[in-house]
Length: 452
Image 1 (spheres, helix red, strand yellow):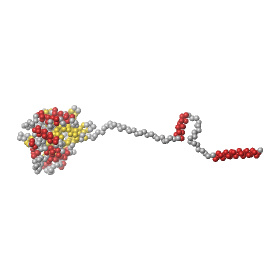
Image 2 (image 1 turned 90 degrees about the horizontal axis):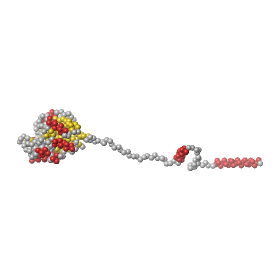
Image 3 (image 1 turned 60 degrees about the vertical axis):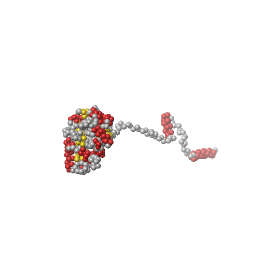
């Protein structure tokens, strides 16, 4: 019995050892990821949902989430509140005294071939004329043709003017741009001479006003645009010389083709209409060339000063005077217009430019004004004005003798002379300069150009 029990015990031990060995040799198996997780203890439903969402992201992450950038939207450019305004524009305008061609000047220009050459007369001013945007002057001599006869002194002592066509050629070649013809000599060679003068001036390439071909021609104002500024030129005279003839034109016809400035102590209605017509046609600044006052050494007449105020009130913006053949004063005049007060510059007389009379009648002024346009307001105003004396002289020596020179304080600035000025001529030049300042007097705001 005892041996059988021992065997039973051995067998039991053997079974246990066998089981243990079997467990020890069994390989370890990794869990599958798809095997459901064991049920968790009871938790709130919201925690379950959150845990499920977390598990889903952890166990099976989706493709990386890209941050979606919205397509760029063009930001509309705001409309500018202030439109850029162009820089103010400027224009310079020059003017000289009466441009005349008496018989001595015409004869002096005659060449050996029988033609007429006036280049020597004007060449010393070429540089100054070209220095401004527009060069202007009162042409006080008809261009009536050779058949009409050139300048002479009539039997009754009156001066009757007429210059060859080449007189215009020389002016143009040396820089003149605008010629006015409303003066007392415009009918020196009758109506035919007046009309031919207008035609020849325009054919030579000048802007022209003051006398006209007919009523329709007068309706077309003279307006010149430079640097975006439209300048109107208007001219008027007291009355043309009648002489002993009626100049083959009636008074009514004359008033149609000639701008008459004065009616007693008033400006004519026609003068006011000429100014208004220029402004209606687009002129932003009107310069009136007034042939007025008296041929005397006296100061400017009070009636002339009254006429200036009337012209400004009628719309003229600057006045340049001629006819006295002597320099007279200048001033700024304030008047009331419909749109308010206006102050304009009046140069009562620039004297003579080309002449051959006695000394005081051979001295004149070159004037230069500067206009500026403010494009923001459209306003055009005079911003600067200055003058320089001139001298018409008859030089010694052979060849052409008459010439007009700028009377600079420094004579070395003079160009265009065939020969240098002599000591006597330099002395005369200094005398002319002194005479000019004495005649002009003081005008606040009017500069001496060669003392810049």
